[in-house]
Amino acid sequence: MPHGRRTWLGAAASLAMLGLTGGYVAAQTPRVIAIKAKKFTFTPDKITLTKGEPVMFELSSEDVLMGFSLPDFKLRADMLPGKVTQLMFTPQRAGEFEFICDVFCGDLHEDMQGVITVV
Image 1 (cartoon, rainbow, N blue to C red):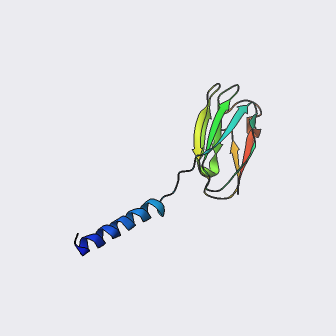
Image 2 (cartoon, rainbow, N blue to C red; image 1 turned 135 degrees about the vertical axis):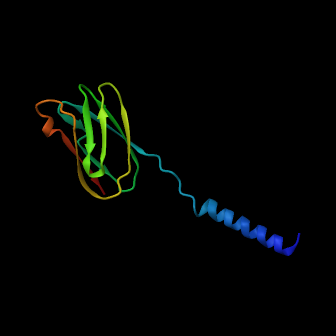
Image 3 (tube, rainbow, N blue to C red; image 1 turned 180 degrees about the horizontal axis):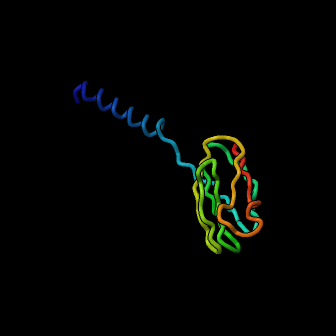
C-alpha cells in the first residue's frame, strides 16, 4: 500500500476513534417523580432537583380534573382523574420555583401549590 494512502487511513481511523470516544455523551435516564393531586394538595409538595438532571414527572389526580403549572419554566399539564400524564423536565437554572394548580378545583384552589428547589 502506498505510503500516502496508509497515512490517510491511519488519520481517518484516529479521527473516527476520537469521534466515538471523546465526542460521545451518554443519554441520561430521567429520574421519575410521581406527583399526586387531591383536593387541595399536591403530594409531594416539596421537590428537590439537580440543575441539568432530566426528570419525568408522572402526574395524576385522585378526584377531579386538576392542572400542574410551573410558570417560571413555562411548563404545564392537565392532571386527569385515574390517568397518569408524563411530563419531561430538565431544569436549567437553580433556585426555588412554585408550582400551582391552574384549573379551578374548588374553594381552596388558590392555596394548592408546591415548591421545586433546583440545586
